[in-house]
Structures are given as C-alpha cells and as structure tokens.
Length: 305
Image 1 (tube, rainbow, N blue to C red):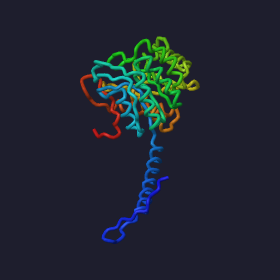
Image 2: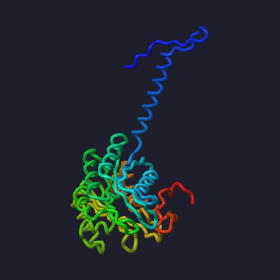
Image 3: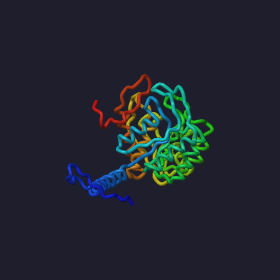
Image 4: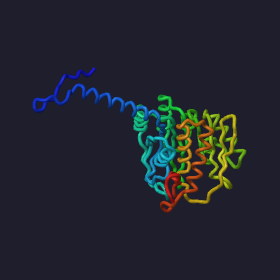
C-alpha cells in the first residue's frame, strides 16, 4: 500500500493545499477512468490475422486489416512473410522464421487477445506447424483457414512440401476452411469439374477434421456460387458474377470477413452468409489501382464515389 506523507504547501504563511487530500482525489478519479477504459477494451471485438504482407495492400495482411476495420472489429496481425508485390505480380518473397511468427502470436494473445483468428499465406511447413501449436497452446477459437497457395498473378505462395502439414496440422483445428477450387483440388487430390465433385471435395475436407468448409466458386463459369458444408447442411451461396478486374485479394477479404463476423458472435453459417454479401459488394464497388488486377473496395460503405 502506498503511504502518503502529510504535506502542506504554504505560500506567504497561508495554507493553500492539503497534498494528501488532493492526491487521494486524483488517484480515485484516475482509477475510475482506468476501470472505464478496461471495460471499454473488453467490449471491443478483436480478430487476429496470420498471413503475408502485400506491399501493394490489395491482399494479405493489409486486406485482412482493412476488412476487420470496415466491419467494426479491432484487427491485430502476425506477419509470416514479406512480399514485394503489386497489382501485376510478386517480384520477391522473404519468409520470416517460425520463431518470429511464434513470438508475434504470443505478443498479441498475451496482451490483446482475439475473438477470432484467420490464416492466409503461411509459406512453409515450419510456420504451419508453429501456428498450429500456438492455436492449441492458447486455446484459440473461431479459427478460419484460408489455404493460400498461389497469388492472383500465379506466383507460388506456399511451398509444395507444406501441403501435407496444412492437411494434418492446421485443417483439423479449423472452424471454417475456405479454399477456392484449385486449392480444394490440391488438398483433396480430386479433379473438380462440376457440382458433384465440389460436394465430394467438401466432404473430404471435413473428414480432415474441420468443423465446416466453404468452397469458393470464383474459378467456375456462370454465377459465383460458393458451397457451404458443416457435416449436416449443404448450402449454395449464390451471387451474380461481376465482370471486373478489381478482384485482387478476394479470398483474403472473404476469409477475413468470416473471421470478423465470428468475432462479433455470429454462428458459423450466418458469418459465412454475411461475409459473402460483404465480398460481393466490395467486388462490385472496386476501383482501378495499378495496371493489373486492382483490389476490392473494403471501405465501400464509407467512401463516397
């Protein structure tokens, strides 16, 4: 306990201020303020993204944090790799060490916490195994796995020898796995040519241990139809296909939106449905940035045209 000495400030022989009383009032006032701040912090919903950095800010960590902010969730980040990237392509990649990835996760969770977590580019098996270990160690819930393998430009973002680690270490921990069709083919070893194969691949991914899966239909022709499956319910999520080049970061944004809605307390299916609406509108409202595939518009609700 802090012991405050009786101290009186005197000016011109006249007592002006009793220091002890003033200090007690000051401490009480600031204690109330601290409690109010703590209460406010507890009410803020928080999400963590574990992914690569995109210097062009259309995908990766940058797209995830924009999505969290747009949906009213505080976003924290763990960087797995740094890419020199723009709307045209990826020119250089530097992978961070697994130890550095682990240290970032610990730093965020031990102080800030997370109501939901999503992964994107994980680069290699060592990082995948480290992330899986930290998810278990910290008991993290609402875990969304976006199995990023290839950039929009076609550049490889995951080493081929890391696919097994993705299947065996990470997917069994996932609340939602949301691959596109090429990623679903790689994970399952199936050739997907139509709706029947999409359903079969969804079941195969669920058999790996995930609670639910959303297979994105962006690589198919016709309407943009995603398939949601949780072991009991198969649901098609339909949206008109939008003719645009503003599609950089669609997968990152979709998975980040799922995580954001889970962080806000939505159940899995509702989170996926709301995220689908968000990404569809973000694609529709996209605008040109750079000479290649421009990013989606994360802040379409807030920016005026």
